[in-house]
Amino acid sequence: MQWAVDTPSLASASQDGKLLVWNAVTCLKMNAITLPSNWVMTCGYSSTGDFVASGGLDNICSVWNVRGQNPTKVTRELQGHDGFLSCCRFLDKSQIVTSSGDHTCKLWDAEKGNELTTFRLHTGDVMFIAVSPSKNTFISCGCDKNIVGWDIRSGRPTHLFDVHDRDVNTVTFFPGNETTFVSGSDDGTVRMFDLRSWGEVNRYVIPNNGGENPISPTSLAFSSTGRLMFTAYTNGEVLIYDAIKTDRKGELRNAHDGKRVTSLGVSGDGAALCTASWDSLMKIWT
Image 1 (cartoon, rainbow, N blue to C red):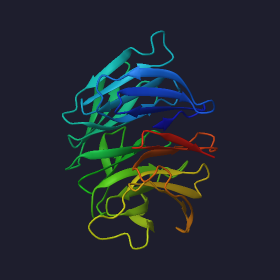
Image 2: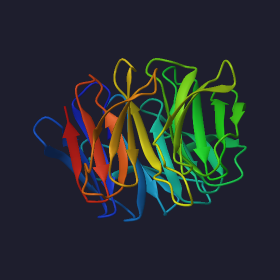
Image 3: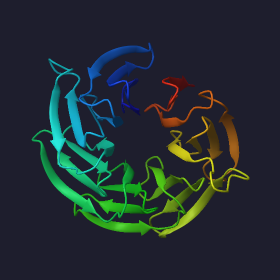
Image 4: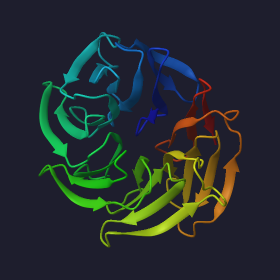
């Protein structure tokens, strides 16, 4: 799921084969789109609120104009990846960055349907991307245990972090910050990095969360000020950390009856947190 930037609406996609656009205040569906493939893995919402996109095991990023005359008819299909689509994020209403199981990320002109840039450095499936506030850079992470920083304008990598012990599932930028981000990995840790120092500056660890099968973080989000960090886990819990001191400040224990929380996000006004899970539910917390 992903929130719109300036309106209380969000987009969600599920393996029931539907992409839904919701009014988060009334909980009413504004759009219901039948997906070309049920095996969806990601969805994205443009900052303008005009477009949504999704993709998955069909290797295609499909785009819809939800404010157009026919919002349920696909506007553009972006084809070029040789593996599953793991994440898609809009830069604006026409440009999208995608990541894939083919070890690459791509920049697209969704209006024309053209592939603009291919970003190559990962040696495993790329699982997630986070775009910086300026839209000039982004971070990618994947099953090669690496995190890569990219310059969108040049198409070149700027940073490489090889510090996690297992697959890296998710990354997100600190609010309003171009240089600080956090990552979550199957090694059970969440770590904060600073691009200026090329290093790790904080680590958030669940006590005794080690061994062969640690509880893995799946999604990350910050409060609007950045002081609190929300971390979703495979066991259905959402933990709340002080992002600066790394202390745990609270938790949404058993938020989804022990089912994996796949995605979470804070609304643009900072007033609400949405969590989505394998229990087929999304919940909004205030």
